[in-house]
Image 1 (cartoon, each protein chain N blue to C red):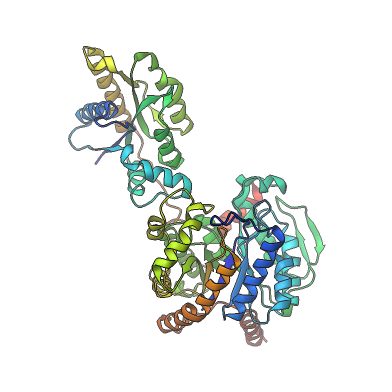
Image 2 (cartoon, chains in turn purple, orange; image 1 turned 45 degrees about the vertical axis):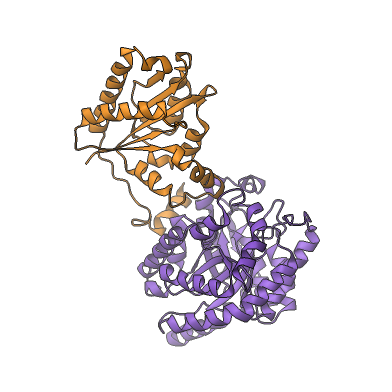
Length: 364
Length: 199
């Protein structure tokens, strides 16, 4: 099982000091978080993509390319890449380039985005969100698998005799996750291609996650990629830890109360009860996270959100230390002990290359 | 079994809005028979949950059953006090959390209370357009009760009876529509792709 962090990349004032980091500081903090994730033994770093303040990560592959050069093991991913407003040709090119530079340590998560004006800023219509996700990904999927593509669709200018370069590393495209909170069409899409399905899982009650993952698993089996319990599932999570749980609650509360998304709404206690947010001791985080498996089954990737709402970098790096030292080693062991042998791990570049060679060997 | 849900947005306790809702419920049950299950929900009991729902984007475990009940109901009775020339803010906030598909085509009886009969057109200039936007089937008679109506106005009872009768007829006559669940019955991907490329 893979463990990692995903970041939204928000520039939010620290409510305890009023201090606002500059964009440059926040960008460097995101890089520091990625490096620390590798140092403490996590597997994945994923960045969001946004095109409006207060968010900085508009250019994920630039950032991930830089992180790739400063890390050795970490898988670099996104949370999410906007399949609706980006040109699928540019996504194909950018992520293939990143694959080569990072030696294959790359996968990508497709999402539609939820900031209304971003669609018109990029010449699109938010009401076409699902059709854009479907058509654009269909083209992207072909661009990574066919050397020469002829294409005509509804949304993008046609292509005749187009070759996306560089070709994917070792002829194997990056593994793709599709993220959606509540659109059954996206679970269906992930299942159709045999891709992974990621549920953001934070900010919402677990029933939504359960329903979406169940649908994805059933349809994954329907499309013949394997058994339902072999489908590739990833989840988000949101944690804040201190050795003593009361200290964690006391320290996190001002950040919670002012946080974007839920600030001013339910109390920390209510929100912790209603959603997967866990604020407490490392052991509480371990217990809660192991419980996710009860409603989504054995899954392959767990990403934590730890750096939003204005938390200072120093605190975030301390959170990573706790994750790396006390939480993830236990979770790895406990999840592994529960996982049946026929449930696969998350695909990596190496495993996909092996699978491709195996397939070529059997047809030769 | 026929299920009718009454929503009362009254804030005071005891509430005249609730009193009117109860009268409408009794009259509707009288028309539809004892086999009809009629529940009354007071939005005051859910005021914090409604605000939280607006801020977080999801209905919590306390509010969720109300929205589910509304979705499943065969008919609705919606009663709001008149605040500042319109329905109350709490009433509108609740309606903002209702999935549009939940009320589409559904028979709805509209009612409102107020201090004076001068506000009675709130039914026609505020409530009815709101429900028209949601494509609900609002019955022709809407019931307004001013404070004075609780005294000697025999017309209030007549209006209640007429409106309840219209709601009962609409509930009885509505076609049995199947609500499909996209999670148990997903649109196959080939169809999604085909619809995209031929749209």
